[in-house]
Each structure stands twice: as structure tokens, then as C-alpha cells.
Image (tube, rainbow, N blue to C red):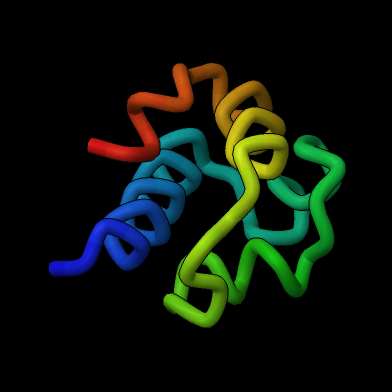
Length: 68
């Protein structure tokens, strides 16, 4: 599995564990709804560190947790 696809799967897994919809996560992270969908489905293969930081903060995890 590619690293990028792993990031998307981790975001989805962590988001679902928190009971958040993609829309709620996008608002909490101040990242576009489209970006969340594309990240989770592998449409975005090289997210910026800023985007990852915002998502990690909204999910209350470390950026490392998105990369594992």
C-alpha cells in the first residue's frame, strides 16, 4: 500500500472512531469538504503538512498517527 493511501485510510479510520462525518471533520479542521473526500479516497496523493496538521488537530491525534 502506498504511503498516500495509508494516510487516507488512517484519516477515515480515526474520523469514524470519533463519530465524525466528512463534513464535520472538514469544518473542524478548516479544510475543504472536497479535500477530505479526496484524501480518504486517494484523490490527493501529496497533502501539505499544513493540511495534515489541521486534520490531526481536529481528530485530536499527532500528525504521526496519520502517517502510520
